Amino acid sequence: MSLYSKIIGTGSYLPPRRVTNQALAEELAAKGVETSDEWIVSRSGISARHYADPDMQSSDLAVEAAKRALDMAKLAPNDIDLIILATSTPDFFGGFPSTACVVQRKLGITNECAAVDVQAVCSGFVYAVSTADNFIKAGSHKNVLVIGAEVFSRIIDFNDRTTCVLFGDGAGAVVMTASNEPGVLATRLHANGNYGDILCGPGRISNGAIEGNAFMYMDGQAVFKLAVGLLDKVANEALQQAKMDASEIDWIVPHQANIRIMQGTAKKLGLGMDKMIVTVDQHGNTSAASIPLALDTGVRDGRIKPGQNVMMEGVGGGFTWGAVLARM
Ligand SMILES: CC(C)(COP(=O)(O)OP(=O)(O)OC[C@H]1O[C@@H](n2cnc3c(N)ncnc32)[C@H](O)[C@@H]1OP(=O)(O)O)[C@@H](O)C(=O)NCCC(=O)NCCS
Image (cartoon, rainbow, N blue to C red; front, side, top):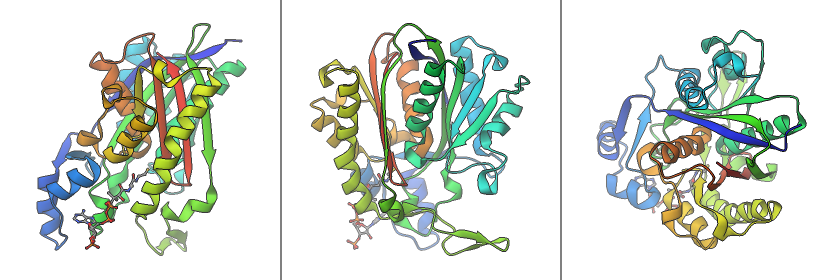
């Protein structure tokens, strides 16, 4: 059995259609929904996001991200023995077949490896990495493909200005492998179902139709308040588990939802924003995809280097939250 799981490849993919705040504000104005670049930037830090074309599903974005991660890891698709995919916008209604199974097929994996989706909304990627870490450390699986992929634009209501300006589409992936060198140093996951209704997809399927609200719902202020209280706490739990101090963190790679939440977390951890990978300005909130998208950005532009300690953390609907501390 290996002592650690280690991230040996990262990849990401954004659908080509990039929409700036200005362009979005103009589109929304045409249907009587008022917003502005100034409001969106000042409240969220977002300047642009990407949207998938209607024929593009989460699996299509996931496959592109996965290919790039496999390439960096120097592994072939058939070397993978487990796929864990985090999404709240699966290819199919009800989530089956799972998007992980669709990705297995589209990657041409013929080894009948295990494949499963996890659902923890914006915490999905930290849940998925933590799950992969435990499978690898238990010795049952060696090379795990972990993906966060979303087409959130499908479930946002473009008549609701309080949410529609915040989200985007994209995918990120990592390849994790069994290693005797550190690796994932600590993982901490939490959930509290009592806060389920502040961030949710409240509609239900019945008789072939959606009953109630077919779009996502968010009480932004309630989510904001909860998030700022949880993120540094869970990061500190991971540090404690690894017997490390915040000063040993080289990079924070947080869920990219809102720059003000991200700034608050850095400050509470006693770290400057120069230690944080920020992509929310260009990607918006891509839910389960946001952390691996930011991680891959930092790795590929050379900021995140081998041997450095990276703190990934996020919150999401459920309510769920978690942190992964990993040595790259
Ligand atoms: C959503 C969020 C950006 C809203 O910011 P806020 O400062 O709380 O703003 P409020 O909701 O108080 O709204 C302030 C005003 O702006 C208006 N407003 C809301 N969305 C707007 C938009 N897109 N454009 C212009 N005005 C808008 C509101 O109607 C309100 O107007 P009023 O005062 O006349 O009623 C903020 O609450 C937030 O970031 N929450 C966390 C979201 C998050 O991280 N979610 C993901 C977690 S995984």
